Image (cartoon, rainbow, N blue to C red; front, side, top):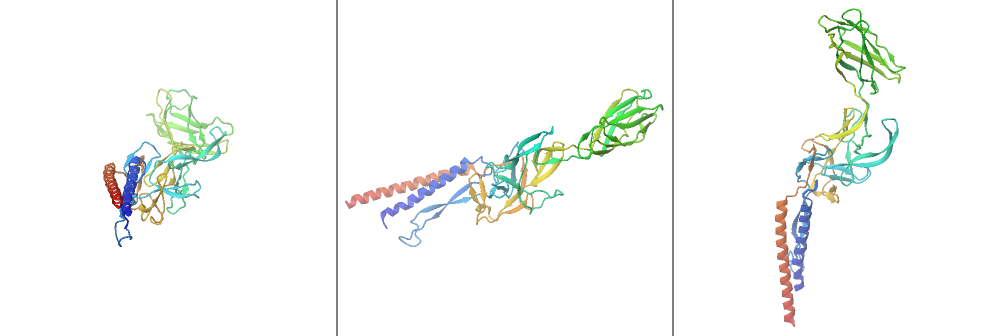
Amino acid sequence: MSIYSAFSTPVLAMMSQSHSMDVIGGNIANVNTGGYKSTDVRFSTVLSDSLFNQSDLGGAKPLDVQNITTQGVILPSQRDMDISVNGQGFFVLNTAVDGSGDTLYTRDGSFLMGLGDEFTTTGLGGETITAYEGYLVDKNGYYVQGWEPDNQGNFSNTGTLTSIRVDPFAFSDSGQETTNADLSLNLPANDATGTVRVYNVKMYDNTGELKSPILNFTKDSNLNEWTISVTTDNVGDTVTSPAQTLTFGSDGYINTPTSYTVSVTWADGNTSSVSIDISLLTQFSGNFTPLNYNQNGLGTGNMKNISFASDGRIIANFENSMIQNIYKLPLAVFTNANGLSTKNGNVFFESSESGSATLKAAGEGSYGSIAPFSREVANVDMAEEFTKMIMTQTAYNSSSTVFRTIDEMTITARDLKR
């Protein structure tokens, strides 16, 4: 064995410890990176067959071990697009909006809205406006994938994944037709015969459009009777509600009827048929005083924002106060998640060691759940990293001392030969 081969052991040792220090530095640098998974460096023996079989004179080499399955600290957040996985599972990403790109996985749920294709739509005043599709993306601009519901609003855990569109024009709600209402008001008992009191009511027709028919209260010659009827301000509207007599008792409270139906065919062809509860009408001396009016309809509205549920559902909140389940986030689980390959941008992709991804619904069985308004940071233990740094530096210094000693021995051997 040549004396020069003695350099191999300390050289490999210094290279290995240098690599370890580089990994420790990366862990510390990413201590606040969302979803970052730390890496440990282990060492294995490099054997040499130049002297004896199974000789360990060759030195050591580093082996990186990923801590992907170790969960990081979950911190609260004020952003409505910050979510985290509490337990097993990864969010699914795709590099292309149509799903034709590479499939990637991440634990970093600090999502953003990324722009898609340009499109035109109709604005509030009927004018045509140009806008861009908006999709849920991660920090790299990769598209978050989710399941769409069927026509009944149910999700299939085996359905096809699609990119999640979340711009205000992605969904619109057709509203809810008004079918019932409650009216409470006081009709002046001292009004003269023929006096007309009017009250405009709000209701939504069968297409969710707001309408404002007028309720007319006319004082009859009878002391305790009024006539209720319906009119509108629009030419072409057809009112089919007949006028009806309201009878009040001597105590000032209405006796009959307790409800009145407003039926109108509007000029645009839409219709309304609303049963109004008038059992709280009164006839007392004083002023005409509307007290309360409620109806169960809702107008049409665009999507205002989104929120997340613990089972992965993405809920759209509309301008008309309606809510709707629009997507559901799957969680990808692996037989050996620590075997995933790492890609720049803090994302992972499948490898032969990790196995293929299995998609599960959040909260299903022992799998993780979605935690809204939170974010997962790195699973790096700073105290442990500094401890490893000291050990690595000591090992590097010791190896460099061995190298220097061998170098001095080589010089001495050279001088003896002379």
